Image 1 (cartoon, one colour):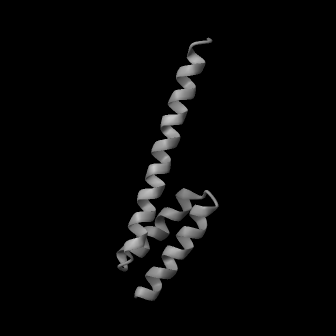
Image 2: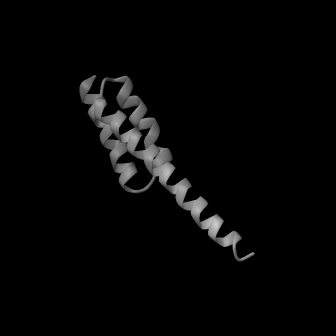
Length: 68
């Protein structure tokens, strides 16, 4: 199963590199279930990206509210 885990993780990485985070997550979850520790780090990276995007969106929205 470790070969499958690495393959699942690789598919997830490929999708993640294309910015397709939602599509990548199920592949990382499959990889984790099959013992791939790297998949957990990739999930953490996607979650960090989502958090960063949310912060940036809030900053922009707050800025725009000043000029409404």
